[in-house]
Image (cartoon, rainbow, N blue to C red; front, side):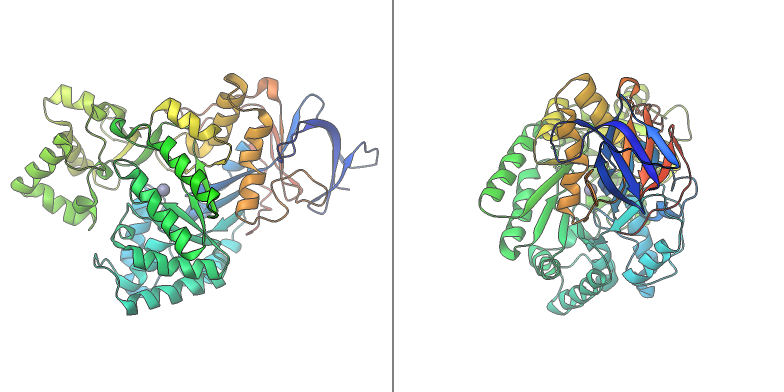
Length: 522
Ligand SMILES: [Zn+2]
């Protein structure tokens, strides 16, 4: 026996009520649960504390952050022991040499200020090999991105795929899934996924189905077209039988508030008719992305250079500003006073940093859209970031508490001021939804973070405190537990997470990573 945890209140991840017991760990596994009296070198008295399975973040954007020494050991202290990454369309593999520059642009556009990282491989196996050669501080699993598959075959083309192009995409997807990708992620509001038509998506979904994989769907929109975009995903599930996860369910923009409830109804109905559906959500009303994403894809879809050319043309510029202001661009949330919900972050100029577009507009006397263009021109398209406060709080809470919802972070490692969800999403649910407001029971909340994603994504032997399971576990001192991550201080380590165990080893103690590096590709 390697570790004996005594007297813990076990919330086992299945949803059953907490119970008191001892847990014995040997060779990376839970070997016994009950009243255990045995000699053991490491005995931890957890009297009065909870023991949970390690949290599973089934939707993050860590990807190349695995190679970042500043970041790769940080998230374990939140109790996250497994991450599934490669979401929303881009992935770091596969990459064909001819389109490498474009593929890197697509990837780093979504992951924001992610560090530069060479891609010294071409296929998915090469990517997994590069990851496997690193010291891993968590377990990781990976999706292959549809946008990446498309750009490998079609470059930056905005045309519908031909039969021949679809065949080549299918072959590349087939290869990636054979080499270990857990499924395919869509990013259909981003470049270049947005240019895929239904036929392309359906044909690729058939390949995922063949492999028993799953599609993680970032849809064509979450605003005016939120429901139609979900309907398209349900059609793909219906037409192909593929397992489908609706990623980060929300309704953005005031005029669309209320649609998240409709989406939940659609999912419920779909499940009723036999579709294999699931969903995830993060517990914040604010999103985090590049400021230029307030414009439609026709403005930024071809990259920063083409975007700046449009801004430099006075006629085009006026048209963009006018359309954003009058609400013609449907996916945009600048209407209904939304400019006050867009907060500029990471701006090197203190006059603008942490201010909303509405505030800057009132100070400068220029329209919010014009202010946004000026900021992008001055500080660069990739580096001008925003928090977008675009969801209704009560609606977000109703999605999080919906019984089928899995908790995700959707977080990105950021070398600048990032979103609190990366270091705080799981603690925020436990603190806000369980401890403070009692909207969820502790058992339900833990289930949403552990056994539900483990089951959905086929992470065998994880997500439960059970005999024979991998010993990924968290000990929490509930009386002293507190989420410390906020929009102003996004990195605060949660208080009260005493121990995190990963594959049977102590991976964090007292809120500090032990740098054990015993994570695995799962
Ligand atoms: Zn997404």
